[in-house]
Image (cartoon, rainbow, N blue to C red; front, side):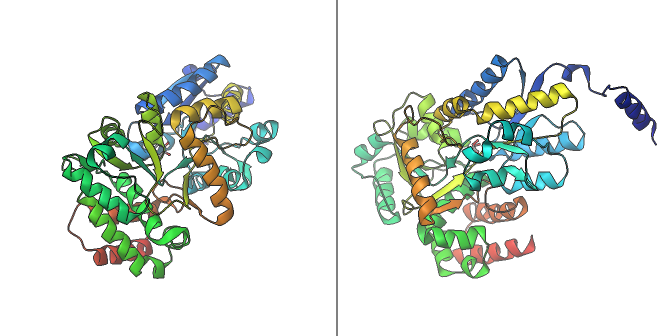
Length: 417
Ligand code: GAL
């Protein structure tokens, strides 16, 4: 036995733990990437709630939309043996972390709070590793939205589009009026966000499910997929030349201030409109991405809990988990974040028309088969495969690659992983 282990064993036997002094206080450290205006307001609500419960909040915010930077920071901390109390991790990645043996069992909180009864099974299944809760859901984001500035449409003499033909008619008019038709940030995760909505709008939910969830090679290698890339190529021509590297919230700001007409983005964009004091239906429109009215790509944010040392820290962790699942939190957080509550039993009264549409559409699509997991936001497939698809799409967006070549690259990338 190594010296350190003997010392640890002795202290543990004496009921003591090798916990750094700073961590002795009741504190939770939470890693997240909620750093834009609307997101920071949402995260601040959780901090407030924890402090009201006597638990201090150590913020571990890592900027970078889609969370790639945050995941890199998390890996470094876990490898160094100093995982945070909780981290914003979702979908199949929760299983990947579970396999590493670093996640905490929070069944005690789930039992107390009757989570099984308040969560749809599709949600609770994702929060469990080998049948035990290891994560808590924060919200449900819908990804297949198009955010539109109606003033820009009016100036351009354009109308709100419902399918891609109408979309390109509107885009042409906006361009002719001297404005930017599509606000976009050239970052791989944003490219993938547009791509999945285009695949959904081109092939429908059943095709999306086969191609981007089951990774069926006949669907990946199909005329429908070629058509989707053709549409994506056309979309590229309406994006301004300064888009490379632009953050998603800056692209949303272009729609908010009327510099651009439309943006493909999940409803965290609504958090930016709300933070700017804008009203849906009046200052902006939330439309299903062209051709996707009958489908819903879901993206569930969740906090996965890591093994922490000491009874105090474990208690604080369960307090955090319970707070996140409370109806008060799910209401206030989601009012700011643009998403909808993940749990049942939250009043709809304060939610706006976009959120109500999201709630109703989620319900309807869960019955019709139109409810599908977002590939671009880590809900559908493991992170290596999602990364491989993202790379192909980013290459397509930044080169003159043909749709045929993109489809071939897609099939190859998925097989290689
Ligand atoms: C998503 C995440 C959202 C939001 C967005 C931009 O993947 O689920 O909560 O943070 O990225 O970073």
